Image 1: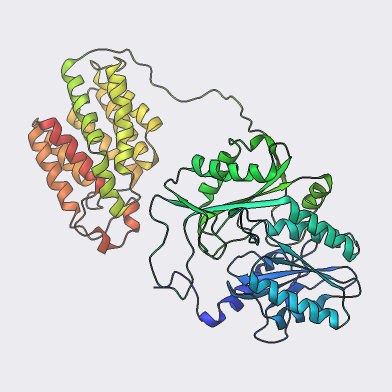
Image 2: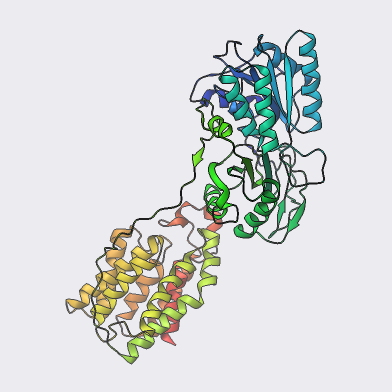
Length: 546
């Protein structure tokens, strides 16, 4: 099945262009109404008094190229179908529509279709009496022996530098020279763990195997230079940096454009940015562009780095303001700063004490949660976000460590419960940590008021239910915990374990969860799966009863 949202495949690109124009915050774009087969996005504030700068190519690389149309960058973008060069007629009509006596510069990525179609259109425009020049961008360094390197994300910096020159009112010869100088100073390379998918291709196969990364893919999914058996961010960045330094040298000041090829999360892009600034290239980086979607490859799970060897003129051009949807402002690199702040929390003050029986119970509970980590994560992956086991195990490891170091008040039940509650709020993540903290803290307070331990634990449960909102039957840990604690009032751990197991198993047949992440999951996915929190409780009581 297709991986794309669309209504009519034949109108996919047209619809996307119109959506982009609608959402443009500068309201400075228009689509030239020439022919349904011709897709040209142009500035609606253009008066032909300056050199026109035109680029374009296949769609699927958004925001390139229409996202860079606007004051200070492109005058117009000519959009082909997905990964297909626009026709000669489309390029020719774009030139004729926006070019005045100052002339026009075409910026073309180094692909055969783009070179031919833009080139022939340029010749036709010259024949019609216009001044037209063309610059070809080949910034890809993945295949160093290739005499025709591909044009990839570094093209955007050429747009910016040429657009700045044109915006200053410079003649065509100077705009062309600025673009050529930029092309000679820009070097790019990318990496991906999954290639891109076209709307017409329903295949689920991917030539890049799980656990691998391909270096040097083209922006249409063309095979890269090598495949490596790692997805480690430090290692991948290191391999890209090694190649960039060979191209730029080890001394040149650089600006780095960090480009999302379409399928990488913002979290990963931030991590990759941090990793870049810990690499061997860090000392040369003066400015940063991105991380952002700039020249994508549909949904490719990958990113690229583009380095430009800086000159004062390039810094001025890249820093100048524009009115476009896609450009990212140049950011001067500054080292990370941090401010030391004293941690403030309501830490429970306790006096450590020993109690062999209680120490054994603590060891049993914590060991149960730690040993069941993978099993509980596996259960949670079916109905939630897959981290229940890790969350409980993290809390268990902390309590086990405190017990091992003799830092728990094992002979003071109220203080012990309160101390456990305080620690779980600190070390356990998400709602589970807060709920368990409420449970133990409230139970400790009841013990301090002389309540029996079983009654105190039930009181803690009531507070958990009050603040958490879950009740028995809502398919949560409460379905195992409440019957276990009620059975514990008899004084029998085996009865409590039996009740907990029965309650946990009952969750597998509950068709709808009333609380927690499982409440957002379709009932079909819940069927037959034990709630992971309830399973954790059942495991704890089973081990205590042994």
